[in-house]
Amino acid sequence: MLKVVFIIESEHSAAARYRVLVNAETFEQHGIDIYPMILPRSRRGRSKLFRDVGGYDIVVLQRRLLQPWDLAALRRRVRVLGYDFDDAVMFGEGRGRLGGLSRRVKFAAVMRSADLVTAGNSYLCEMCPVDDSRKSVVHTPVDTDVYRPREHGDGPLRVGWVGSASTLEYLEAVLPAIERAAGRTHLELAVMADRFPLRRPFIRRIEWSEHAEPAEVARFDVGIMPLPDNPWTRGKCGFKLLLYGACGLSSVASPVGMNREIICDGRTGLFASSLAEWEEALVRLALDADLRERMGRAARERVEAVYSSEVVIARWARLLQEAGKQA
Image 1 (cartoon, rainbow, N blue to C red):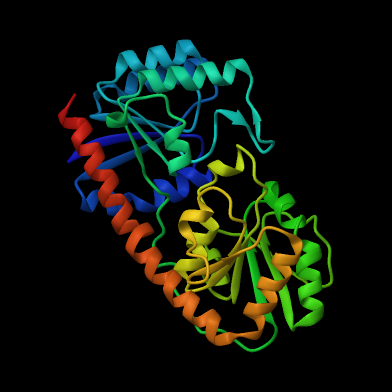
Image 2 (image 1 turned 90 degrees about the vertical axis):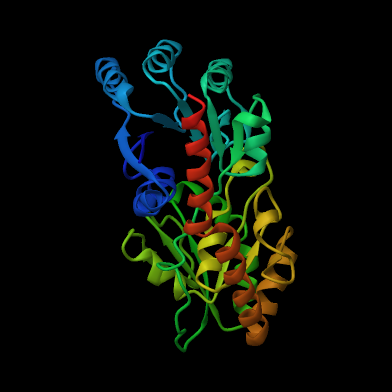
């Protein structure tokens, strides 16, 4: 078995949880033993970690852009260094601006040091200034045995959004369209998040938890993923859409970044740019149950074929095995 350390930000980090931690058994089935280790805050702690990981076959640093001295110390200790990321870490988070010089320098340094770079989508992969032989797209996988279609109950059409409160501003931008659609049809907006600053009569609040997420998402009737278009959001990996699709839901999304790859417009979901388009897309799906069912079925098939844990982790394991052989 190949022994691979993943240096993660936190066990609560979405990237660590969805890309690594929940896939430990699937990695093992493909010949990879994974060892998640949290990057310490102190310099002394990091130095100890870098010494400890020296005996493993591969070490994958996830998302973090290390200071030059830390990166150099890690590089000296390991035979094969990987870097995995699922956000536009080279840009200022959430604002779509170029990051400062320090951030850009650190990103370039990690790229030079890494033997293998795995990026969550093609946009991020193209941003990596390394040879094609050293970089690959590895989507964030979905466990389609856990996230799966379920029977839907009676009541209003449930338009659903799941995510962290830090991205609620994207949802807030399309609330006027959702409110108008609610005035024309019998629908509610279910928001599953860790905080709830939004207040509207048509919003149903659901407290997020890792345990409850699969069942609650499956209770949606339509999933939504609004995004503005900027360098940061183009790096988003569309994981909301993958969860919706795995649960057999049709979706409405902004045609931004990886959303364009996940949704087949008119077949697995609908794109909407303006508020008018958002309103009309939601009304169309609210009034046509057969269309929702057809799109949801097609979305599930696409997720199973392209984005399921079995498919993605098998490919990632092959990349790691090849990197290990070349060390």
